[in-house]
Length: 468
Image (tube, rainbow, N blue to C red; front, top):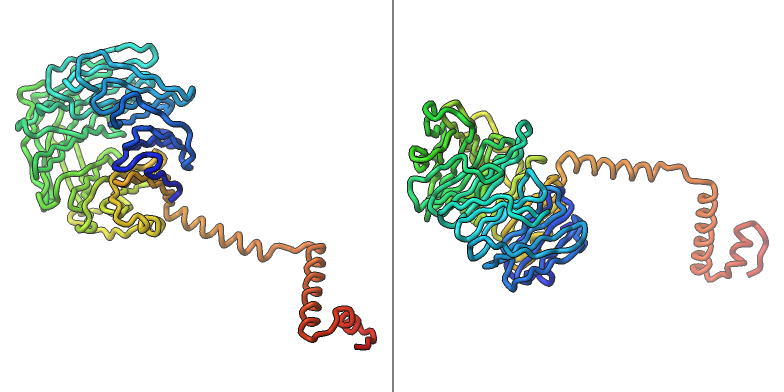
């Protein structure tokens, strides 16, 4: 591993960590509740001690990577760490609610952070002037997921999507003004883990789960005419997916397209998923299945096509992370970390494509030392050059990941360096010194072997008479 952080610094048990957007820093914490700030080489930069005695539940960097927000279990205090000044401040949120449940930095401003309280209230907190720039009283149950879209290049606006326990999904502007709502037909199915597509702020993905049922929800927030819209999902050539009609927008003000895709129960629950580019979603299932779902939006329908990548069913999948920059997907389960090229799941037919996934050679020896430690969370850095994985024992391992082209280039550079070293001209002074040292060593060896004094042996070598 490039560097390792063990339980002595973080504490035993599951840990929480996140890389900064610029890929230079990682913040990690565990049962010790002390947040460790490290650089990408594993050197300790600083430590942040939150005020409450409970463990941290969320760490969140702002888009410029100079401010870290921290919340703790059953606490209304928001801890803000400033990287430039190396100081932290603790703000008690006065909005009604027992504790802070979720925080998300706004992509449109480095000073604004969205805060969801335990009772469903939302607020936009301005760190610069310590004021609430906007609030939203939903009157609904607890917020279970928050997600910001990227800032639109043309309009400069972004959206905030939030889902509630009562199966309502709301889309708000950056000023927390409600624009669209969507309700799931069955209230026991709550959309969680909302995720906007990084390349398209009109596309939203969510996970709907209840018991053994696992559904992938895809939304298009494009402002199309509602009377021309048809809520539908189409699948082609898929043996394991079926259309799920759990999404309803007839009694809400949602415009655009919506639909959900249900998967075979034998896959297990959806553990996690991530966008790949602007039209694909990598979905990981509990029983070791990884699917690539291709999303196409028409004028009045959603077209979903899937491929399948299978790795060992004996491993229980815990986490999946995708890097669009290097085209690699990392996923972990039990004591194994796996990497594969997403392009291996893409082909013309896109049906039942099995890819052979082998444990990466670079990581094999490192991970064998983990023994029975279960790997819990995996995350790429923003530049796609490093991958980190945490264990249930409170350790964090970070690895450099090289592409095949980089490995070939490195091997070529090493071979050229060796040839250059061999063929490099030797200076006359070094050659003379080498000759003299070699002659002395040879003379000493012969003298010892023949039991003859060195001086006498030297006289004989140079042709002078010598009486022994």
